[in-house]
Image (cartoon, rainbow, N blue to C red; front, side, top):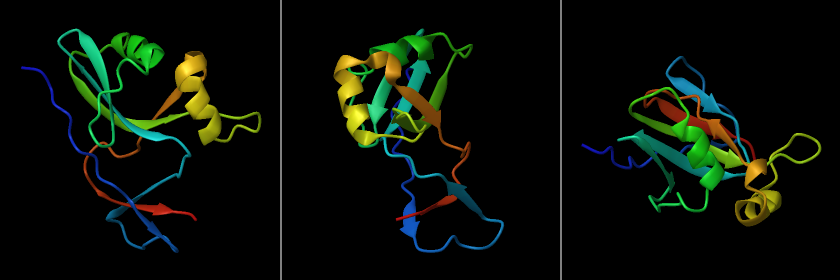
Length: 121
């Protein structure tokens, strides 16, 4: 049976990080929320809304196929870094069509489904 897209938890932007042990905090990147599904000897990549972007992320699909797993659903974000090492959304949009080797997949910290809060502006 093939694995199916799982809608990701979407963090809530807050002015101040919440307190307590039940919270996990996630860094804010300027990229595309992405889910990689590996199963049946293949890899597929979806947007946060479940659109299949496998054909847009050819190099990431090839890298995902190399992972030593039989089945996995990996939540993260696709980014491109600028010269200062910061994620750059304009560069990301260009890289998808012109410079696939510049794409990075950054895995989300959550391995289960804790409550998430995103701190930033």
